[in-house]
Image (cartoon, rainbow, N blue to C red; front, side, top):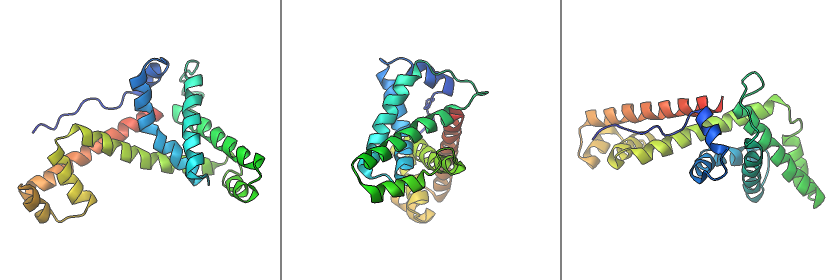
Amino acid sequence: MPWHRDELIPTRATLIHRLKNWQDQSSWQEFFDTYWKLIYGVARQAGLTDAEAQDVVQETMVSVARHMAGFKYDPAIGSFKAWLLKMTRWRIIDQARKRDRFGDAATEQNVAEAMADPASPDWDQLWEAEWQKNALGTAMDRIRRTLDPQKYQIFDFYVNKEWSPQRVAETFGVSVAQVYLAKHRVTELIREEVKKLEKEMK
């Protein structure tokens, strides 16, 4: 079967332009599907609970929607990636303040320590680590949806489940050479997709 896939993730300029339209539900859904785990992961790493992190995701998406109409990409000022981090960071701080109002001093202190300095390089490191994890996961999900299921399963069983090439070949009725070829091709597709995500967020 052909190793064909569509252009899965739009360029940065195209994505931002599409998000300026409130009525473009498919683009907003795509944006949410791509980045919610990134935002959630950073919120959890900052010490928030699952429910609080979910709130951060929702509030960040609302904030992005409110500001997108006036957002202008200018690399001389800053990247879209940094802008999204800023939106996420302040939503996390808002959640910490809500805790403070309700008197949860112990948990508030944990979050405060994790966010001691909003401008700290630790934020950038945390964001970058979560971004890399999110980019790989998103790329794999998108590639999986575009490939023949068997091709991806061969890759999944060999790479992720760590089956031997011989066992994978016997299970799917293919040669060992085809197992190696599937791994190579799927890996390349995932690598290309991650690069697109990285370009989108610069």
